[in-house]
Image (cartoon, rainbow, N blue to C red; front, side):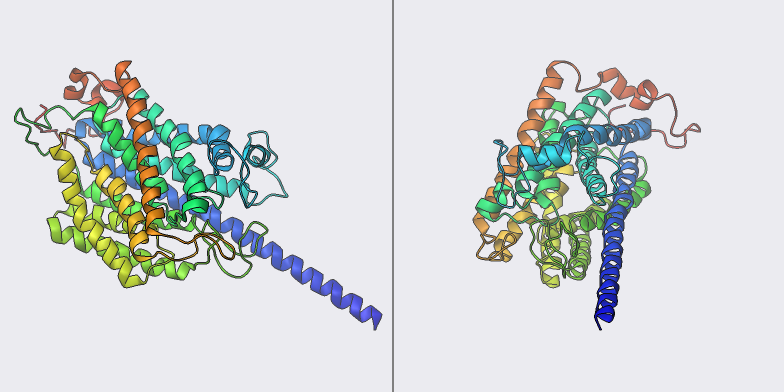
Length: 459
């Protein structure tokens, strides 16, 4: 009998070990797959921005996107990942309630010399989590990239992209996208799909840069009226936008905490980054409904294929903060309303003399803000974090979060670009802009056979 019990115990232990190994492999693979999917976002931005540029600037627009991506990775490795774990409770670097933040914790898990920051057979999560966050960082730089096409210096753009991706956005994530984040613990801030901590931050940072960068030559007339400067390939732009949508599924996968691991919030159900329960099933319903509402709303307002596909992205961004909470028809309505407002926001910005070439502020900045406020209006009262008798999501908490995100994005964007402007590192010379950045900055030609000559008010 004792031998049978010992054999049974041994069998149970083996089964438990096998289940744990299988679940660990699933978790590791789940986050690993978010990375190539999120790379599709950058494939999309590459096509989107090159198509939205005139042919004389197509390669220059692509190069700055690729280079920014590459430059962010090492900066994020050496400092950005550490910032995320060091500052959730504020700039003091103190430890939070869940004991997964503060200077000491950050140094132990995210300093470049930490055992978790390289190959480690006992750690199957740090690298893939780091990879997902790097792709979030690169996404913020790509958002900036679209608004400033055709007249920004490559060096100036790279400085701005690194500042945004490796410092500014990750500080926002520490404050509002971390279980110990002070916006979460003090105000019940909820932003499941990063409407504020990625899109709003990047959109408002871009707005600050645009004020110092100035419009493209020929964009505005003497009387202040604006000229339309079309890109050279609308089909490429539309395909790029659809690829961004495809990549967005990887982005949202990276917002999910899978169950059953030592670092998971639950052993039985997926969680948000705050530890609140959710399901991938519910997220799928709401993502598709927001996507559809965005397309329909933008199409009804403009009949413009560019805004229609921007509306698809805008619809998801509008719903992103509450994708874990919405009833699907509500997600459709929120995406629809956001996309309806989007082109009017873009027109308002243009009437202020600001040349946002692809509507980056309207799509990401404004709709990210709308997404946060929508949660405060229609989804208040849910627990904002893991545990019992915790603070709840509220309208005021979402408003405070939106104000913080707007300021944290705009102020550094304006300040850094102002310094670059004063030092002559922000904008290319007028002669280079008129001739085309590809001719003066790129040792290659996008269209050697001159199939797409640029025609615009700037020439």
